[in-house]
Figure 1 (cartoon, protein in one colour):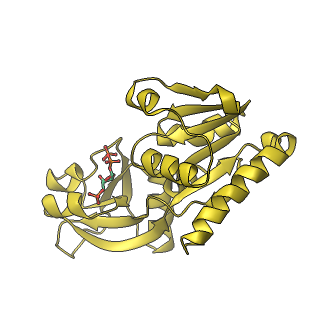
Figure 2 (cartoon, protein in one colour):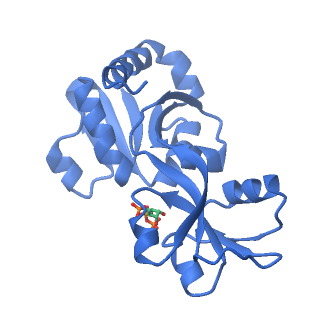
Figure 3 (cartoon, rainbow, N blue to C red):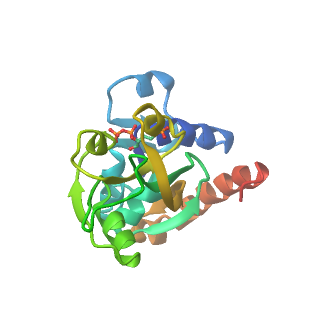
Length: 210
Ligand code: PRP
């Protein structure tokens, strides 16, 4: 049996599309429409865990999942002890600094984010002293209601920023989803993992993305 922790949300649909194109087994639509968290494809000895993106590297590091599919944003934030095997080139977005359109910042501005480590490292590199405030979501609220002057967050279409009167100040990193592996599983189940890797690489190459 091989287990794959799949990040629920925006990544999942595109990831299963890619798996399907690669001829890899995917869960039945009924299972994906349900609230099941563990979804098996028994004929292919494959099980998917449908997990919160931030938890995918944890499941993989601890070896309860052999593989994981998760955004580079999560991997950058956590530096987990896992192998990053492949850039799947799906769910592209940016990690950006955003805020109200005023360009002037106070000397020690507050920065709200779901990514405190990325934000801290970025502002440190810029030589800018900031106070990081950790939030769990809807981070765009922070500048609107006066909690923070800037946010560090994912920008995909830019719609959330625009509809809340915010602007992107700069891009910290380009983000796509990645295939990760538990280090022990990579050794013990190498043949099977290499086959999955090869099948996925073929599709990504064919789409001219690799
Ligand atoms: C993400 C991100 C932004 C939004 C950006 O949030 O944190 O809020 O998507 O997407 P856009 O540029 O296409 O508008 P998500 O939907 O994951 O929810 P969250 O804010 O609750 O984390």
